[in-house]
Amino acid sequence: MNRLEVPASLGWMARHERGRAWLAALPRIVTECAEQWALQLQPPFPDSYVSLVLPATRADGSAAVLKIQFPDRETEHEATALAAWAGNGAVRLLACDEDRHALLLERCEPGTPLSARATAEGLGVLGRLLPRLWVPAPPGIRSLADEAAWWSDRLVATWERAGRPFDVELIDAALEALDWLPQTQGEKVLLHQDLHPGNVLAAHREPWLVIDPKPLAGEREFALAPIVRAAELGHSRTLTIARLDELSRMLHLDRERARAWALAQTVAWSFEGNSTIEGHVASARWLREA
Image (tube, rainbow, N blue to C red; front, side):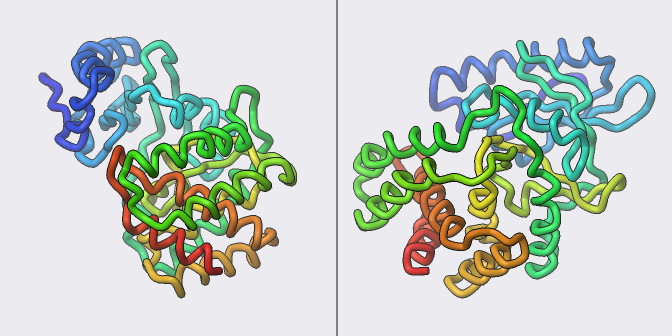
């Protein structure tokens, strides 16, 4: 690769100063990582929105992925989570450069996302992967209680800044859940708080491997949230509640706690800047009624 072409999907970063600085630094960071890890790089994958991700070949001829993260609070412990999983149901971490926010990862081939499969098959795959990820959370991982407090502190202001785009009852329901859930959690484990079908890829080493953790340390019931609302598995009230019921039963989890966590996180994640993700709002309404 002679010249780095930054994918259009990362163009939104140029809207703010930190993003512009990160985009400007990418060519240097990529060059330094390629030299440090003796990589031959190919053009970046075109559909990454918060990191630059490039196929790579190592000096021994093995395939890998170079991932340059935009530093933010959700991804700051990705390497720690991947190291804790050690390839058990997730991609392997091959190397890490904390100063450059760079990860060298196992490459999933063929890399087809689970979202391309039938919904029933996808739900089964996710249900089997989850228990493998529930290892003891390593030191340094942010707690689910701290994350819940962060959402709670900002939720009303974010909703008002967005123009109060949906009924206040949803905000109230999320705040109520965020008030009682953190203090009454069960056993804390390592969680992937964004485990939807697009973050599970087909691979040779295992049929399916998890990527892109946004790790937290908290109770298992929370882990159902991104799957319950996953539009890739079908977006309707019936299907959303069916996923909640099926996963709670399959994994022997407390359905009400799983429902309340899914509602709270879905409301908290319903905003992109001053805009609203309408699908998340619909999912939150269904969960409030469930």
